[in-house]
Length: 315
Image 1 (cartoon, one colour):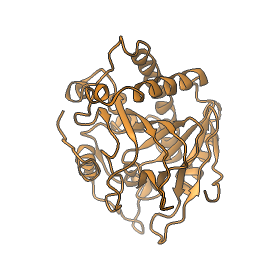
Image 2 (spheres, rainbow, N blue to C red; image 1 turned 135 degrees about the vertical axis):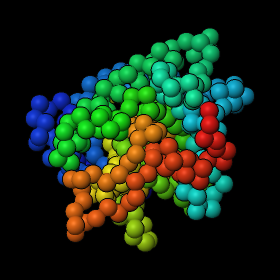
Image 3 (cartoon, rainbow, N blue to C red; image 1 turned 120 degrees about the vertical axis):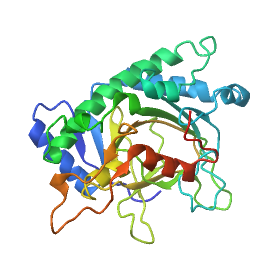
Image 4 (tube, one colour; image 1 turned 180 degrees about the vertical axis):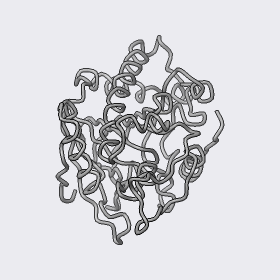
């Protein structure tokens, strides 16, 4: 493992919205990653989600494949995804289970795949409770991000940038085996996240690395340590496009460290029909828009079709 990157810590419980938004702005300018503490999701619930996640991934493969991914939601086996299409590996060494809201149009197009209650009786209620809790965190956090960009606090809600029904939760299991040749083995190959913001909770096992300058070669990777009870937050591609590159989506990866690793990622994504285009507060005559407007659905289709072995944009 390399050097450990020291990231800013943002206290979500602070009543000082303006000063907190300024801290978030600086964190997004400097790193694109920061820790989020006092967010309101109990450690007990976070640990419960990790425990139920381990139970699901410990099921026999044939039982997990009954819940195989259709479109965006469900179970994905080892090597189903390769986040870095240029990588020479056969795929990323991880298992994934994705779920989202059970309400609204998106839930009809991409229905959740739930494990049988008799197999995992506490699984669904635990996950639904977690989903509701982290949506509250996301709403508050994106309000502060809006303030950090000199926008109205509810801006992203008004433009469908924050849509509870569009957010998804990804449960991840990394086997953690090391390569006998000594080469780096990636559970998640180098990538930036696609959406707006990501909230990550982990079991404390290391492996996450960040590359602060994704345009520089060779890439310099720094380790990111976990803080118990805190979320790790990072900027996604669509937020970079909205801010005209002011807030950059940061390249990151997960490398194997010889130990099994579990994490839970929550992706806050815009409504699929939302058009992402440069914010007025982030462009000028001397800094014109760097990215053309794009519909969220089209951007995601392009990215997922590159990274999943079997991807269909339909349900």
